[in-house]
Image 1 (cartoon, helix red, strand yellow):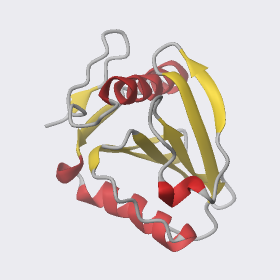
Image 2 (cartoon, one colour):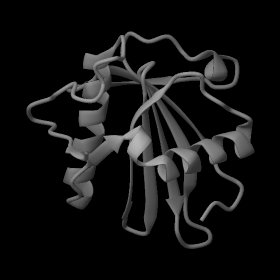
Image 3 (cartoon, rainbow, N blue to C red):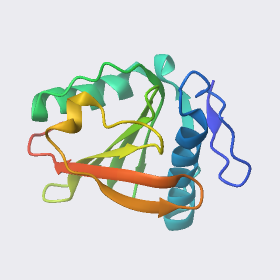
Length: 155
């Protein structure tokens, strides 16, 4: 069942099993607010088990590009197109959010972003490979983020 993410009245629905459910809900709401304000897009998530193609696409890019396989269970995911970009998000039980921004035209931006919910440790799969910058969010508290550029083709 899909769920529109409300960034005004935040909810932990679908994220309850996460030890940082409130912070992860804030992170998810922060993304929803961004897409609504910038593109007018309504950010809608689904249980990860209902959208295996999205989760598999993100996992394939992570594995092929950087040999990353997360041990944490994916809870929710979404994919959509805005402004010539294919976007995909996976929200993990650990509090991690992974997004893929994939420009549909050659030469457009293509990257994978990682955001860590406040209160979670850096996953061991990322700890020795990435440095994380901090940003403040009214919805999510302190978010730590990092990214890498996608080199392969994954249309």
